[in-house]
Structure formats: C-alpha cells, structure tokens
Image (cartoon, rainbow, N blue to C red; front, side, top):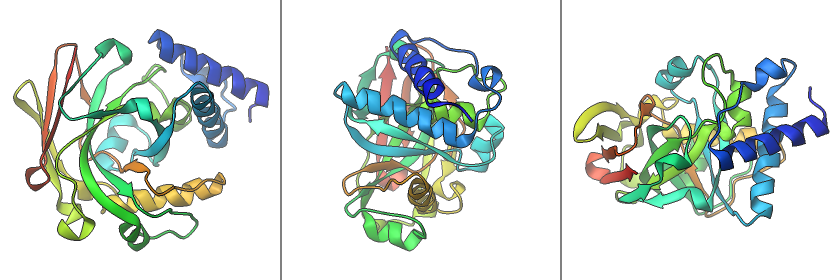
Length: 261
C-alpha cells in the first residue's frame, strides 16, 4: 500500500500530465506494491483537486465491462472513473485533438438518473427504476500512462482513461427500448470501423450501473439524482488521428458525432 504522501504526489503528477498532455511511465513499474484501493484514492485526490479549481462532478464512467474491452486491454474486471462538467460535449462538437493523449473512441449508452442509487445490493431493476432516460454517447479515452504492460491499478489511477464524452441521439425511457439489443455502427471518416450491441456490457448495460453503485458503496460514495453514467463500451477502442470525423449510428436511438482538430 502507498502512503498518503505518495498518493498525493502521484495525483499531482497525473494532474500535471493532463495539463501538459504528457504520457508518464506506468505507476506499477515505479510502485509495484500499489493496490486497487490505492488507485481509487489517487483518482479521488485528482478529482477533488480539479473540483477545488472549479470543475463540477456530473457523473461517472464504467470501463472494462465487455469481453471485447477486457481482451483489448488484458484486464479482467470493471473499473470506474469520474466525469466533470468540462468533459461533456454535445453531438457535432469539434474537439481539440491536442487536449488528449493516446486518443481513442468507444461506443456506449449513457444512463441519466432521476433518483439516487446507494449500494450495496443495488440490482438491475433498481437501476431501471432510477433512470430518467438513456442516450447514445461516445467516450474519448485519454491515457496519461504508457499503455504497454499496464494493469487495472494503472488504469484506475488515471481516472479509468476518461477524457471526454459526446452525447447525442434521442433520449428514451428504459421501457421504450430493448436495452441489451440497442446497437450501433461506428464510422470514422465515412467508413464503418466497428459495430456492436449493448448486451455485450455484462449481458445488460444496466448491470454495469448496478456494479458501479455497489462498488462505490465500498468507498463510502453513492450515485446522485441527475448524474450521467457511461455504462461501458460495446466496441473495441478505435484510435483517432487529428482531422478524423467520428459518427455512430444507433438506429432507433439516433446518431452522435464529433470531429477532432
């Protein structure tokens, strides 16, 4: 385990890397004794620092919930990160490519809550009852630690690689769509690169939100009404270059797009 001093120092390094658009060596290379709890403590310290400087917590992201993502990263359990208000963009936005490091895109559903969720023992049915609506979203991955050889400890510390999200499409109530069969085609520069269905996320995307509420309870935290939850990707990460246009067609849920300049 790490000391409070080490946790604070690492959080400061990651915050500086975010400002500098820098990529640092893996934390587990420097601190092999790190635990998952250390990683979440680093993440919270980093988030608290940003909030002290004016950012506002608006939601959470869940990562590594699907087999395709676990295979892509070599990590076998979910994780979570925080979403601040300056990370949320509307569909059609132009994003600054240089704002991010190791830029990749994932296709997800976002759940917007109208009731709080507090674990433990939150179920899929609790999540559905607490959800105002779901909406298509793209997650922009932003990794400040070198990717090769990373572990879940590295990923969690780096806010689960959360960089930004782009929200679009048509908000729908959970009783208006068969969520596991919600689907999307992912395009880059007018060419289809990937596709998937939301059931790839733990069998039902709401199951990821239930996992999150129960995991947060272990850290003395809850999900609040009004929070937006990225429920996990059902496509593999797609690498992005400057000038790329990204377009995801969710069929009956609409489309979401962005461009990187």
